[in-house]
Length: 172
Image (cartoon, rainbow, N blue to C red; front, side):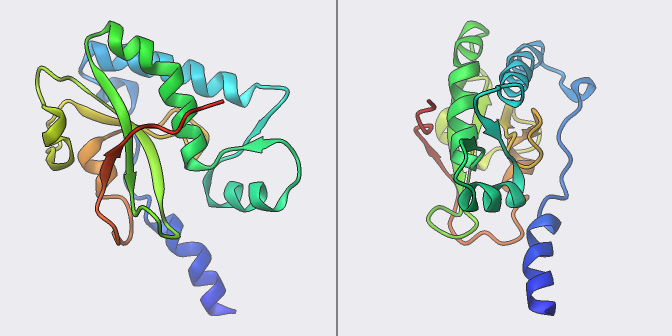
């Protein structure tokens, strides 16, 4: 029984970094992007046709249920990317997908947004906490959680496969 409890608790321990509050978002462009992100997540959570799940328990429910459900991390990534891309472009920032632990049981996908005037795409994965690079990741709680990229990259309990940028999953 103990190994099962440990298996269920370990993923929860990996998420010790809190998302940024709106007050912590110094960039007006980031606040504008976050507003679009909030609208996307709210619309998904209010969708009468598709039930959006989040977190590890949501994943289990999606895999075991025959109902129309979404909420795997790559599905959230596609939804968020499609929903914020126009806003990101309009404020002069860029966006793409990011993954960590690819092709493992703890694989995770999200969207990264950044100010190309302050950090180059090729430098993103080495970004410091001060860099204008942020991750939009609603998977954990089904909420519009925004993290500094450097913080998000340090969240996994164990990194088995290095993070990489990727083309976002095409949302529906």
